Image (cartoon, rainbow over all chains, first blue to last red; front, side, top):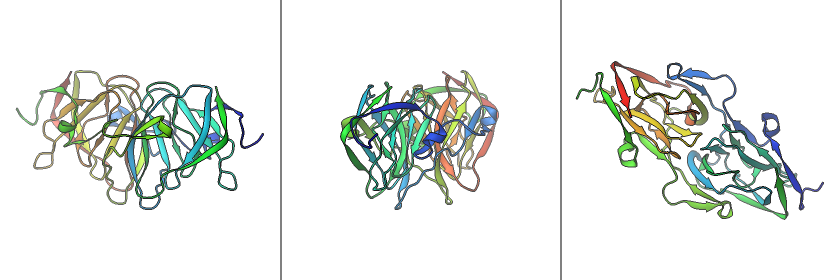
Length: 166
Length: 166
């Protein structure tokens, strides 16, 4: 196996343990508290938000074209100054495409996790990740990420694309 | 018309102008920028987040029982120290129930706005609002509000309930 090259990436189911290195799963898990006089359960503070250099949290909407499988992954990106949370405004899962950093900081072999309906994710600061990858319409996400001055994104182009398959 | 009493509240459609006093509509409006090499449109920084007393932004999930119309509104609440954003994790609209503050700080006659699919809302700090009010399953929302010490919520009980009708 090489860290680069035209090779196939099998989609994996997501769980906390395997995703831990890359970020948080934002889901109704853990002990909720009842609010609104019992009408509503609150699962609090599910993502580790991190915004450097006097950045602040902002809420944006991303409207993305769904990907089709197999999907050719040509590049990944990362945000050195802030975490980035994606919350689907739909009841569908999506793909979280990520890569560990090698010793020299460049991305290793990517992995693709399929989220479950009702889950969002939060990429830790500086984690290599692929394009936003809904699997169907609508590809609408609320995004909580850093607003502020400074470098917003770094890209890394693979010498040969990876191919993500279901 | 009295500010209190058993009276009917007609649901209104939501728009920026009428909701301005209470908060932001989080939606894909305005000029987007293209990201992910054109796959995705980004509508940035759609909500005015405000967290007092060394509070910080956190992401939570609220799972709420849908309301049924007519809905009896017995009380409203407000958060003196922070704004509170609600993003539906579904493709359905919901009700945003709010009230202006009277001169003595207590809530005036409530209003109920029906959001459109694809919209979230952000209540400004200290705005009186009703319970989270999805109109159907799943009543799942991602919520961006204040994490930190201090008063989290104040409630106001109406002497007679209001009745929200479609």
